Image (cartoon, rainbow, N blue to C red; front, side, top):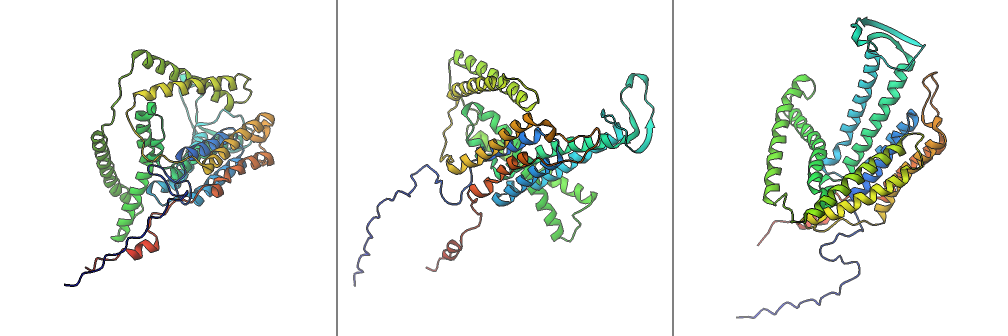
Length: 397
């Protein structure tokens, strides 16, 4: 009986510096950017939008967010929610203008566009009217104010389309884990809802049924509700299986100190942010903000002792994350500083009506938000590479 010679074993290749160690993620190549960087970038754009009612500047912020989402959006289901947030923003804008037309506006005006039939109200409802004169000043004020709110929603939608909610939950401190689970489930509801509606509408089209109109909305609503209930039951079972809610025992004094530091720190941060975002704030905002951040950070550090959760393969915070987060913070800081020096450039006059003018310095500051479209790494594709598909052949043995 012939003896088959043994196959020689190739020598072991030495480890190279580019080899990743176990339990870490590589910061090179296509990868998902750290979700905290995307949220800092979007919150910076939102802070810039909150300081202005100039429609040209607000539309520029929307264009910057849309370009970055188009350039760095992945093919995951939760990344398809940006279009839904755009439609929600348009709906908010339309509702704001409609309320100003029907219920009036506190802005005085002399340019009457048209007059609606006015409903007489009792004496105790003085100051409230339904119908009456509709002025150009009132419509412009409602339009600019609604556009600002719509821009804030679109900035939040950009963060939802770029940052994975599950990966965001993993980077939260241990003290905020339970609250973070609730927030992540809430923020992931809109992308999943949009994906379910798109899937069901595609199924109706394949069956030759109409996917527009009231009847199609009613027929899609029940399957979407059923899918949401099934998803919630599966999520509850998975959380219970993994021991969600377990905490380690800590002394009562540390628990009280944690609660006091966290509450006082958050109150200080809220007061300082309100002072920074409003015009005419004093010099107290920056010290209060620093004290609030320090107290909140100490509270979160002490509160993390209660958690017994471990973290597997944490997302890296590399140069791309610093550039993305820094661009959003730079947009917010530059806009806040410029609005304090020239408030008229950020608020278009409605009494008397004036054509909006784009401030060049503020526009240049907003354009810094385009940096993530070039600095952020490309997200990995969900499809297999061509070489991997070619290697996947059926077993012929």
